[in-house]
Length: 392
Image: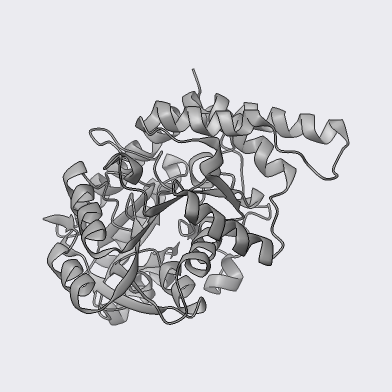
């Protein structure tokens, strides 16, 4: 049995871990509780460490030939976890999911093409579209923390029909709200994309971080005859490997793979560095038990945070955590947007991400996003500090 808190919880405070090390640069103070950037405070599974140690001991750091076992590990994991059948030839390397999205935008769309997102959503979605010289089109999700967030299908179809949208950048599971979209919701998205010939770019990097009672459905499982999509995923979020710069695109359409390969050759990208492949293979082959234990801690931390805060501040609302390790909560019943940073950072001594980062169309937003992938005592401290700061 894997004991994450006993065996996989090193002290990161004196390391180069960005979450801890960069507090003075990012927040102007070093005495904050770091619950912001989305990586874990947990060490990866021991099998990943052992695989990397073997790589170092082998003392060959030259050009690397990716073994077939790497693809087998990912294909088998994808089938076992989501019953999603893929083939090795569908996979293409990218250093990160956002880089992969940029690759897809350049390979499959043209400058000026309109790309749709629905806020609140992961903020690099905006920049990756704009920096590719595509036209960003923003809408808002429907709902709220209490009712639950849903896709605005009416607005989506209206944009598809009248605004000449060429692609939609879709977040599944959804960051920051924590939604895990249902099969019915995903079917509507696919049906609209088919009806209006819109390319579906599905960021599924949080697909393994699913809470009790919910199931992640891969976009490729909705319609077996539909292949006008690109799925983006990575072991980085799941297994805490972001520093190895390893992710992949799943491209089922053969013509699109040719277009993508042409683009990748034009920028002389032939693959990644060996450690990324080695760690990914080890993770997808041996990491299941470790992941189950981590998901249990995330779920427990979410309830600890929610229960502690709402016991003292019952009008703080939380979006139900269905997936990801990111809590999305609204302090607006107690804190004005103009005072949010002062209360949270200066008084509660928390380093968090603020809602307007993900929701620029809602300038007065009072949400914060909290990273739950850490030790329970850190979450408890954060909750108590926030309560004390708001109560004054």
